[in-house]
Image (tube, rainbow, N blue to C red):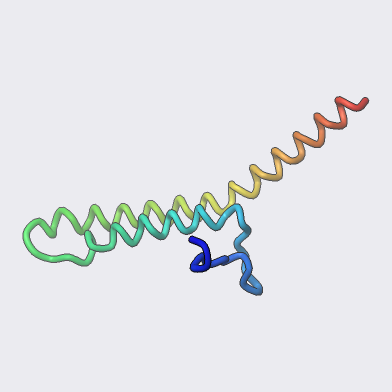
Length: 90
């Protein structure tokens, strides 16, 4: 990666944190990989096209859900960790 790595979270006004960036990149890579299923024609198109649409739709829905649940889980783990730290010191 080195000098060619792009830090999305470093862009001004970005809503992505460093924790969410790999999740988004992985989803977009999988969706772009499924794009030929949707766009290609020819023999078997009537079977491949719905498969590609379902795959990309599922990736987008799961991405939207992940963007809500991941920050919530990070907050939950942080609160549990601080609770247990306070319990240890008491």
